[in-house]
Image 1: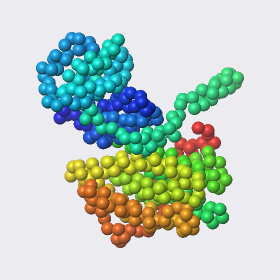
Image 2: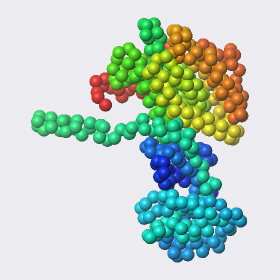
Image 3: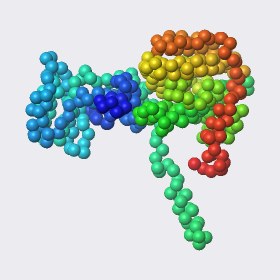
Image 4: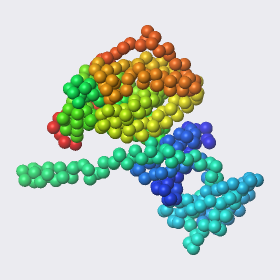
Length: 186
Length: 257
């Protein structure tokens, strides 16, 4: 991190809307540590209530490549500079179908490093139409909310509706004022 | 419910509402000025929650005395004078630095968690239900502020010093949270609200060890610095706060928003 960078480390945030749904990448937060990252992620991303689980993962530990980059040899490049671990561990695999899509959890693989994890993901999860991009990280890096947190962290948002623009009667009032002005010839 | 009991409950609800409102307003003053963007959002959310809670208590109060629960809270908030507010003085102090606001919120969060737990068993059913619901939000507040107090206390020399200064200033004023309102005794004996002394014990048992763990020295309780202030006594800070908070509403009392 550059010395002029006074921002805290970045954590990527993954959100699960309901039981059984796949976690999705919703963005990132800066925080001094994983616990505050989780709390901040809740405040930044769970304003609307549909959330049963939140994950935060250090952003610099995430390995992501597009299908295009992979086709151009990105994995070979990464292998050259990286050093695989000796023991296999569980990697979470995310992919997005289109450039404008959202990275969505598709499953897990066992691998000795992110590059190997991505190679396995290509084999296991590509499907009929290979995704536009992939994102992988070791499961051990996840700091997650618990089911017990739902009541205090996520559920309260159901009681706090947004005030939508349509809740304000500005247009109606404006029309009245304009009609009156027209009547009075002003 | 007899007239005395009702009056006592009215006063208790007003005090709770005023605590939430004034503290919520002070917290909202950080909006746009917090040390980091995520905290700006987080603390604004907490402020919103507090103001929402004030609204709940004021609505219960309105229902109790036969006023409209939609409009009466607004009357209480925007059209009362400082001398008619019943918040504890610690709420009206200016926001200070981040350490001050975090610590004030933490001390109040612990208090509220214990108070709301007791109120969930209140003999007044609407109060019990409201308390149970609000408590779920307070659990989260406490997690957030405790995390910050720990990080500031055990952080740098500067963060520890600022937190210690904040504690030295706040500690004597916290005693007011546990002082009974004039007519509170009948509410306590009737099982409507918890007793102040018991609450104080529970609160101290929680905060003292935690603060010491966070590298802070907790001032002596019951020392000469502890002045028993009535909730009808306020500092000029409240006048300044209300002048700003009420200014727009008072431009046109009849305006609909």
